[in-house]
Length: 157
Image (cartoon, rainbow, N blue to C red):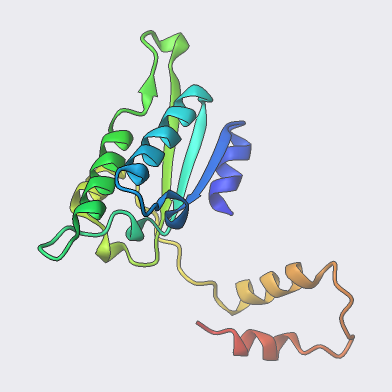
């Protein structure tokens, strides 16, 4: 939701990608999809590319990492490197890269270096959860006897 809000406030094209949409069983196809994604983002710049659960694509490399994962990660790192296009300042169009993960400690160090800002968003507190529940149920027909406090307690964590 935060990525969509950024895109709409910046009046940019928004590309929301999941790791599964970039996966392919054919050799070289995943890398091609990553390359095509960023080419499209540059073409439609200014744009925002958001990859949810980036840790599934940019997992830390080790001896047990397979060749396909390494190639996809390499292509992703290369794509993230040069995201500003255009020669003079007036014509510069940019592509903003955003990513989200629940497991930042699993990210490859090269990817972490390329992410300029890191923002930690904690789980909502009781007041926040209550407001979220009320917002989601605002357009629904619910009983007057609903106990929001009990729902808030049940949703801890």
